[in-house]
Length: 355
Length: 259
Image (cartoon, rainbow over all chains, first blue to last red; front, side):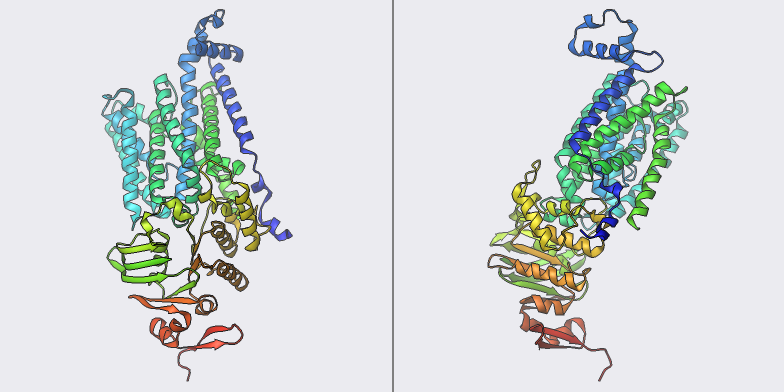
């Protein structure tokens, strides 16, 4: 190979690890992080006791925690674990739907926000909070959020569709326009909501405080469904990166697959927004970072992003919950850490692309 | 191989084809020439099954094209598009391997045969040494060769080129068209949209000339490629003559206003 060929590919881009190893490493780290997070906080619980409590609950043998502080199981199982698992599930879901949106929009910098999907979900959820709509119980806010997300997605697709094609440029532009209108709508709802305004504002900033097992279940079901759909179509998503015309000639129905994946990704992000408010940069940053390690193949990118997103958001949430003197909304943390880091990577990519 | 019968197609109110009848036979290299915006790419999309005609019927090997499943068509028809952008850092080898996807089950790894074909195609297209390079860091011409290699890896009886050589230098243009010509056999054909009539004259044995209001002429090269056709369709002053060096017809043009 001539030397000039080598000089085009910077060493940093060559860094691809075996995906199985990365996957196992991240899975191990995620389990470790869950155990560590369950032990840390205002009441410190040693990690072997955390393991004992979890094992006791899983196997149903209460005798295993006979000599423990009776408060410890309550703290771990009813207070911390739901919050921890929700954080991990939301992180994974956001990362994966970000990867899917990026794959369909053919833009590594796209995510649920660029499409206006999160803004639509936030508008729907704010509306549910304003109206104090609780008819569907736990599902009230998620259903409104999903309605908002899908309605937004449809509006964005309608605005950008021309002669049966979904061009990514016009899709993003329409997404930004619709998101701007919806943000104004959310502000108007905040203005209308006298008493509930505090709830809406704090929820919009994103928080995992006081999550319940029911919310864990809701997020887990959506995440499992979304992940299965995404993984099944991950190879088709690879082909969509070649453009609709080429993907079509390689055996994919580009329109059908894009639409199905867009709607599923919207559902997943809508449930995330409904459960934990707007948490930015996870869907944008995680797939971007994971791509450095696994490469862009979605069959590897999607499962690894799920774990990495879960790990990232759980760590951020543990920092704000257990380490900081006063709890900061998680959305603020991810934006403060993720934003500059993202700018750094983006700038690096830009300078590498045009040497 | 292909039969197009009374094809009608329009983008919204703008009719592209009103009543198009065409036949493509296996064993030939077809060239499609015509002015910009007369529907050459649309014709390629119709042949690829990417667009469906509003009226009329396209048959491939006697069967209606829209009856084929997408996966089956992907083993019959390969397309090299005109320009190709990719924003993700796939390696060249990964892109070429995508041409084998129609033969590989959804969750399976590429088999030995797939790898052999990919290696062979990479060698043929002069891409050896590029395997691990990232496709989004290549020049336009290099990228185009990767896309061409991908379509060769598909190993289809029908190869559609949509101005595929537009961004290539002379060496790689002739190399690509030589390879494409090598794909013509009694069971297969190549259909290429071309801007350069001299390249078309070198490689094609059948020529289809389109005009803004539909098909202008089609048939053997020497019937279609005439000074009269070029004057009528492109409004250029041209001379068509047999060239001893290229051993084909070649076209010479003249500046306007020369005696």
